Image: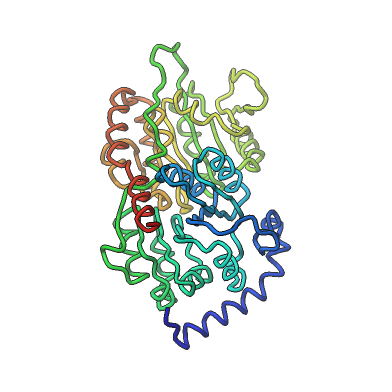
Length: 414
């Protein structure tokens, strides 16, 4: 890699920045776990064939899929790094189920001397980065060592594209061998950022679709259930709008039982006070009490969301009535109910517009439209068997990304 004076100057400044911030990072409560590995005072790995970096929990599951999909006729030495404790716990479970020799470690800080040492120790034939983990220190040291890297399941928002584009001359010198992006828009953004050809930057199905098994609908022969609504993953920023939905729906459907799942448990107390102030009867799930005359069950224990989807007549998936990116609505239609969302779904744009065209998800542009869609869902729910046929057709068309990714990796390893 040819380094211009400007390129060299930027990395001298980047190195100086790490000298300044590293003392604070190693004292951070969030990064304290695994600090010895992040600074290479403790090294768990040696030379490997393949290095996969999975930033956190979601990427960790994808890393497991990739390793499982690799050819088992040749045992590989694989290093998988992550930034979070949750990611590491997932990867350690995954590692035990593989036919390859897998080592799991925390990712080193991107300080140039640290990543230089890590690249020298690991000496990988190929580095695989999942989604958008492009750290300039790591990529520069890979290039200096003459190593290849690719980005898989790549996704990049317009906001990220603008931010990274401010130092576009850096990224064009650190370009990967290939980018496998999850949508055509993501492919274009990566190609523009790195200066890649259409052959180097390609669109393939999102690997997350390969983790979805089959449609799981509720047994229609179960005893008749009361009318119920699930409000899932409700964020603090949209609580006023969600309270409006609760009040309006209870006025129209007095017998409706609402299951409210706050996104974060520390918001439970606030919901108790909100409902009390508006004279809405509620109980906590943890109380184990019968819902009785309560109109709202505040779900203050983790889990159980999939089961409630199967029982629900209607669902609203939160994080979408405020501009915070949305939450996972796929789980709802996979479990037998068409979810309603607000307009803010940037984090799930990779799913594509087809889910809305096919009626697998209903989107309202504001709380009034969301209210109307929920009323419609409660009054005219979609037949679960019809929904199941639609879901399975949709998922089948979206799967296969893991095999394509593994083919690329096998090619580069050879």
